[in-house]
Image (tube, rainbow, N blue to C red; front, side, top):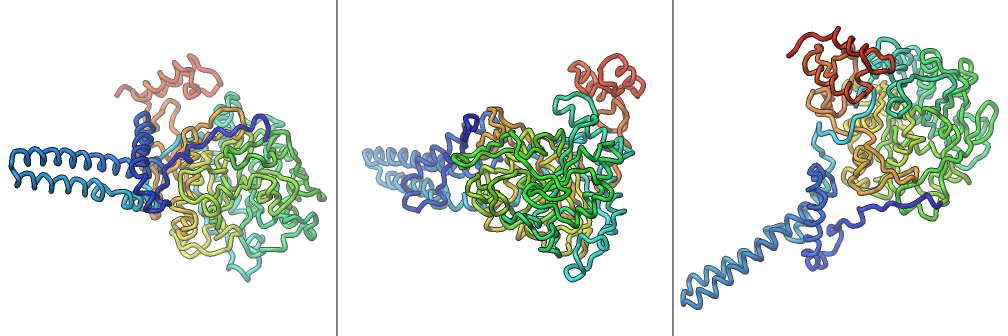
Length: 615
């Protein structure tokens, strides 16, 4: 642990855990636990009322309320006994008897009717068990992206034609139509930015991303580097320096890797549409070898791209350590080997996270956030090259189905999502959902969820919001395989706990101070999280017009609003005038209506031209 690697502390250890104590100790310590829960609840919720919805507050609330009822019950009993003594002194024995009965009833209510210690523990357990049934369309966090909170879902059944295991490998050219996949990638990019052409879409995404990073209103600049993190988990080296011929000779009938056709489409977009030189692009998975089949498929068209490989091999670029450190915001990392980002990611100006849609035995599900497990190069090699090596912080310790079940806990995924040179550089998040695997290796099973209807999902997802895209993927996977995504081993709501932590990273339910750079600066919200209304309509709050959460689009969006139509209602009117005045006064980028990089009279002229009259 270096001098910069300081653990900021997690508040989760101070939470009462009476559900795991013996009934004897629960009863003895109930007044103390109840008082502490009440104080803690009031201290957290009064300054910020929406904290009452946090999982930890939902656990503390019944203890606090039980304590209040217990105190009131004992207080009422004391008053009733005092009245009984007065009635006895006045020789009013019937009334005295009624007062004694009232005192007994008050004591009984205080101990039992209030939910009492034992029942309070049961209520706590019940609340925890119901955490998976979150309220739908209740967003948390701050939506991100050129179109805030937008997640694009492109579904095209013509992309896949595979009978399943026994019919060759799913990734073979006979089973994936490259032309259709190219069309899907084009639609994903255009729909995400709401632009008519691929080139305009990429420019809008780059410009917005650079504005958010404080670099100004600039698009991609020649010479800037891009690293593409794909998922090649089936090609992990497992400690072997010489995988036979670099050929993917295991799990041939599995769907756990980012398909080569998807990688091809993305490279065509970056090189042919966004104008990026091949030599400025790196693609791969740092803890795996780059399989020969993928290499042979991509290099005839993209020979100058850097194909990342854990070990040196002909035509590949070996992964190396950089000097950029990575710190884990948990005391479990103390005494472990320091982590550093790979050179390809540390030196990149932009990162594209290209995950695979699948469930996972240890995490519940794995998409973009967990894809970053392969973004850390570790040495010496062990199982999965240090991911599980005891010399390093054990990344699986914070996974819900492995070492940290339930909600309101530290999640290493948030550190990965928020590090300035990893998640912080991610321009766009993509999920390859052509086959949608079941389990870490992507065991193929056709989906029953509509509109797939006993076929492969044949889908591609895209977003600039890291939390939103994983939230949508969760809803899809939970609808198809609820028993895997919410496995009992993960604890109630455990699989989606990192989404809560990430959405509320500035003040997470666990109380963790997420600081993977070790600079003492806390994270902001990493995106917006919510659940759709139902698995048939698949609507989120921006679709319904009821909130500022996620917008899931699966078809060409409407024409982009005219400059000045800030509320996108089709009219530039009085409501937009108020917005424009605020943006103009604050010199906000939104006021740059003519997109010349400045804010001045020309923008006022644009607004006046489009203005349609007062409300």
